[in-house]
Length: 111
Length: 109
Image 1 (spheres, each protein chain N blue to C red):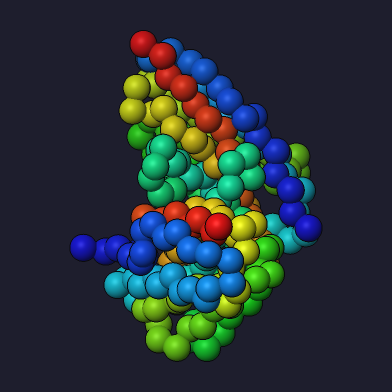
Image 2 (image 1 turned 30 degrees about the horizontal axis):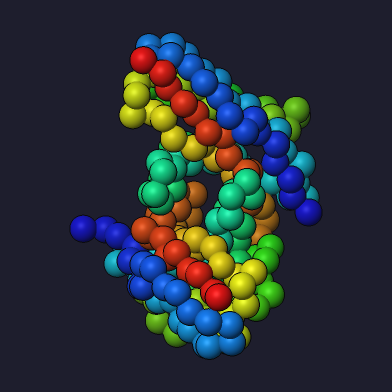
């Protein structure tokens, strides 16, 4: 089954404790993205990747890092999480067809 | 930068037709997409307009006018399961999507 998976689905952590949210897709898509979703603000792009070792900042990259060492994986790293990074995070992948496939989401709470 | 405007909420009855409008201002524009998101779920792709005109997919249609920086999503024969949030999103030259803040559609019996 074609899908994008994210782990963990739920995470509660404390300020400053480094964390990684994993994202994996099995569709051999070139492009992958991370979004955060906050009430009333829609989805805002954090980072995206055009292929292995090629990444670029989205609209809200501050406080986040990404890497793309393999085509299927695109982890999101929060080196020192802060409460304003409490949000719902989505990973997505796509080819040139414009249809983005989203993962199930990761709800992160930073206290 | 990019900005998209869409209504925050729309209410309609089962069987009716509803139109959700989206206006955008972008630097670099490749096309307009629409996504549906049910509460607690992930966004799912509905349609994409790269050229002016109407695209139809079953009960859903989407329209784009590049000259007016305007598009809409038309939902016909509304069903209760169509209650969800609908997002317009623009593809820019950075191969990235910028989303609007979403329209919450409530379908009433």
